[in-house]
Amino acid sequence: MPDLFSPLCIAGLELPNRIIVSPMSQYSAVNGAPTDWHFIHYGGLANSGAAIVTVESTHVSADARGTPGCLGLYNDEQEEAMARIVRAVHDNGSSKIGVQLNHSGRKASSTLPWEATKGALDEGRGWPILSVSEEPFGPGWPKPAAATAADLDRIVADYAAAAGRALRAGFDTLEIHAAHGYLLHSFLSPLTNTRTDSFGGDIEARMRFPLAVITAVRQVWPVEKPLSVRVSSSDWDPAGWEIDEAVEFVRRLRAIGVDYVCMSSGAISIDTKPRIAPGFQTGFAAKVKRDTDMPVSALGLIADAAEALRIVHEGDADLVTVGRAFLDNPHWAWTAAARLGAQIARPRQYIRTSPGQWPAAPQADLQGG
Image (cartoon, rainbow, N blue to C red; front, side, top):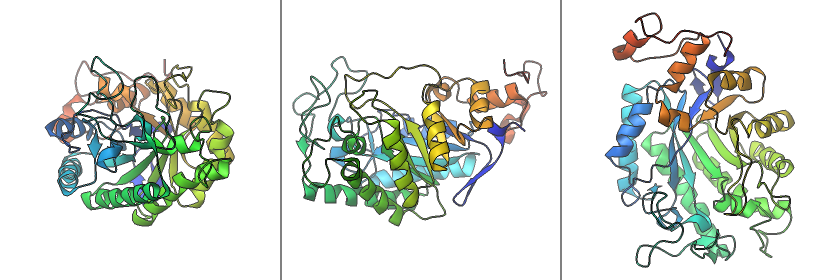
């Protein structure tokens, strides 16, 4: 079978293939709780053929949310609504289900992406926010307060509590977001971390708070369930966080018990722009895998089945994380398997759509063209 569809064991979790559905924000929560939209969305992806479906960025406190429509996991109502989704996926799906925990930092208290005005919420809808410093994400964005030592202790506790709720809700995997300009990434990057206390300065100091958060989560999250971290590979700025620092950070993550990393990049500020193209972050994943021996997932506009196969087959990454291609085609993994001549799980209700079972079924393209 193609390597993309070969099994993999991470921690104590057996995966039937190497495909992960990326956490993709739906901005449709009510008071941080998932709604029927989320139930339908994740239920639809449960039989996508992916090994893991990851619930979108889920925030560890009310003030950590990016927008009023962002998910949270900091109260009983949210936990039970999440557990309903997890039960449905476990009872009716072929995929495992994970969740990504996050604190938005200076990107919190902002408008929904489809609203006409981008940035800070109107007066009365916003809330006070915390970040590594008082600098806003960009013009028109809310201004944060610099987190105090007491604030940071609370945030560590919030992450640990959210991890406990994720465990009780029944999630199979847990990911911590340390990229895309959110709070943990803001501590790592010299572009945003201008602190003069023990959490600012050289790379050792800038890693201190993110490592404290992830250590606290690891103490709550059981070792037989995979713990991953989404890591920024580059700020796309010569003065910013770069891949060699990311490699060192991943080495520290491995030492504290993280099971794999997902290598992303960019979004440290509104002004920094990555050079985007299909597979543009795969090279970062390959370097991290080579230099750290940590299991790695590649992501970044991976939508072509042949490219996903190549990434795994040539050893650039152990897994591929696919995002918008699954929004466009919730059965992307089925299509990829048919194209590459592989077998993949389908619910018995859909068996008649398998290759060879109906005249219009996709045909294998063993050349990957």
